[in-house]
Length: 110
Image (cartoon, rainbow, N blue to C red; front, side):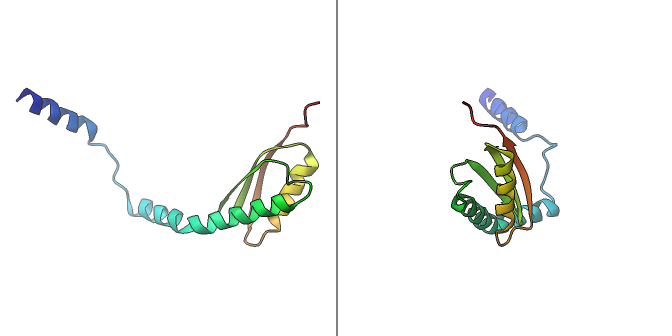
């Protein structure tokens, strides 16, 4: 009997009464995220390819993320010119609606 009480208490504590039940809006947002995932992955790949094909940028490690046509660039580059260039290259990719350039400029160490 004592084991049953302990088990019941554990279950009650594991599932608090204030647990939030997903709303219709939450479910719709999750559906949108799942349905946009392939398009986002495709666009991210296109931007990464464009950056890799640029002679001045191909050796730099630039992280690319996209969401519904909005592309975000993150990482470190060696000059302000390369930061600007990466943003320009990304903007030219078909499907890109906007670019948020969060690249940081860190000159190479001597």
